[in-house]
Every structure is written in structure tokens, then in C-alpha cells.
Length: 412
Image (tube, rainbow, N blue to C red; front, side, top):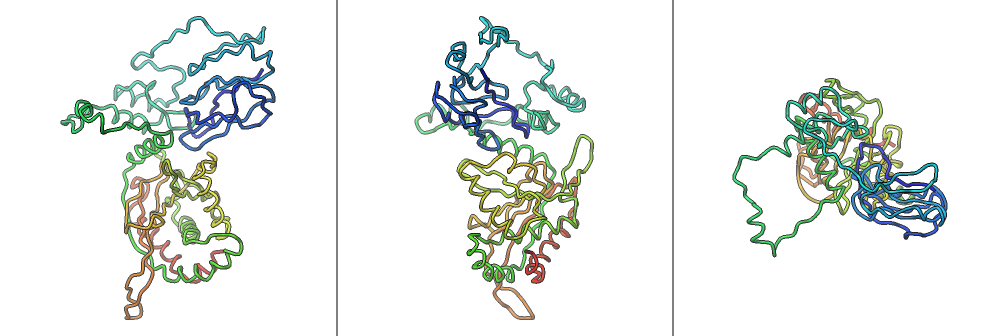
């Protein structure tokens, strides 16, 4: 008989939500057949059967944590010892008899204040900070590798639990008085992850550089190349050209392709170029990642953009396809409105580029007013790692590439 547990899928994920079972209890399943969909804060993961046989489902749809028992697999005889435990997922295996038993009584020990269990992963400096802020690390959700608690996790927890010394503008009493006209909506795993990432992003001391690009020639190149790409069943947009320009600019401004280790006070420069793209789904934004974008052509990047966006929308994108970005781009212009905005940095990246709606505007060229294509952009950056002058130079280089006919012609 084989167990199926919710295992550590990486990226610091410690919990998920059983979205639905793809088979019924006591069904016959085959090895590697997907049996359950689990939604994490990164993606929807299909968990396969470890062996062929019958399935005994243990966990109902709902929240689960890493290590929780999901199901058992085996012959009908072997599964007679498997007891449905519901959400508790507590079982003890008697290896000698190869049967499952349930303890008559399970003692629950509540952790005392500042008493750390062995499961808490944190460096001495983080433990010291927690002590200074009077925070029990057992109550803090870690976002580092394997659930390691980082300094930002402790500070975010401190802010969320701190009392607010203001007059409440919306009290429970008021809520009760409007009970027939309000609705409380549970946050999805994705929405919770977005909230947590925004809290992490807000801890970054940021600054913003804004400018605009003359995209007139880029628009001409796009119109010229679109029919050729259409014959290859590839949808061509401005975005692949912008990605290529960004990658080349990153090679000359390496601190924008890095992350900041606050504990060691070191900048981690990255010699690879994984470009994250913010993609909207019905349950919130996800960041899909074009891996090794410097090694890919405009055609390949254009294909990947479409493929990844489709995977985000139908919830088939893998965790790996949303991991390890080194720089992020958010295409606000694709939503059809807005002139400039201040995008939130995709932690732990150092910067994010917001590109906005391209519009026809009057421009002065050769002492004459002509109509051209204007592309506004905003660059939000971590001011601990880069300064404003560096941001201007980086932005100018992106402009230079996108406005350069020779670069655009050779970019594929």
C-alpha cells in the first residue's frame, strides 16, 4: 500500500487548497494518472497516483498543509485498514503488520510565547529581531526556501498584528447593522499570495523614474513583420522587442538584474536573464517567466508570451514557469488605458518596468510638428541597490534601443 501526501513542491510553499479530486473514492487508477488538483499560491498542481490500484481518499476539498495525508493506494484488501480521517490527516503506520491504525487520543501542545519548535527555520539575526519585537516565530509564515523565516516576514507580521491607535471607520457593530447588504468573501490561495507579496514589496525603499519613448519606427517594423509572423501562427506585439531592448540594457546595467540580501548586506548580481511578465487571470495577477531571454529570438519570445499567458488563464502553468525572474515587465498598456503608473516591485527583483498605452501624439522632428507614436514607461527600483542617476541611464538605454532602426532590424 502506498501513501500520497502533499509534499514540498518548492518555492517556500507550505500550504495549498484541494481544488477538486479528479477520481472518486475506491476508483481504480493507473500509475502516474492525475488524481487531485491542488491550488497553491503559485499555480494549480496536478498530483499523480504513485502506483496502479484502488484509491482511498482521505482529505476532502479544502485547505491542506505540506505533509498532510491525501490518499492511500493499493489492493482492496490492503485498503481495508485505511480509515477516512477527514481534515485531520493523522495516521500511524504499523510497519510490522502493514496496516494503518489511528491513535485513540492525540495530544495537542500549544507553543508557548518565544518557545521555538524544531520546525522553525530562521537565522540567529532573525530570531534576535523576533525577540526584540516580542514575536513568537511559531506564528510567522516563512517565505524563504523550505519555509525559512526571513527578516521581512517578521517585520510584516509585526505590522499586521500591531494595534492601530485610530478611531475605527468600520466596526463589527456597523457591519452587523448592514448584515443584509454585505458579503464576506474568502481570499483564494492566489489572492493571499498576492497580498503577502505586496507586503514584502512595500518593505523595499523604492523610487520611480518615468519617461517616454518615440515608438514610431517600432510601429512600422511591427506592421511590416506581422504578416510574416502570422504565417507561422505567431502573434507579434511590441512586447518581444521591448524584452530584447531590456535584456541588452540589463547587460550594461547589471545591478538592475540582481536581488538584495538584507541579512548579509550584499547585492546578488545575476548573469542570466529571466524576464518576468505580469499576466492577468480571473483570480489575480501571476508572473510568468521567459527563461534565458537573451538566448531567444523575437519569434521564440513572441511564441512563449502567448503560450505562458494561455497557461496562466487556464491554470495549467507550472511553478517552474513562474519562478526565478531576474527583472519584471508589466504591460499596463494592454489594458487599454492609463498614461503612467507606479508598478510594485516583484520581490525579490530589484526593479520592474511598466509600459503603458502607445498613443499618437504631436512630436517635433526636424523643426516640424508631426504625428508620432509615444510609449510612456515607468521604472520602479530598489533605492538600496541603485540610485536615480543609474535609473535614468538604464531608461535612456532602453529608449535608445527601441528608437534605433538598426537595433530593431537586427533584434531577431
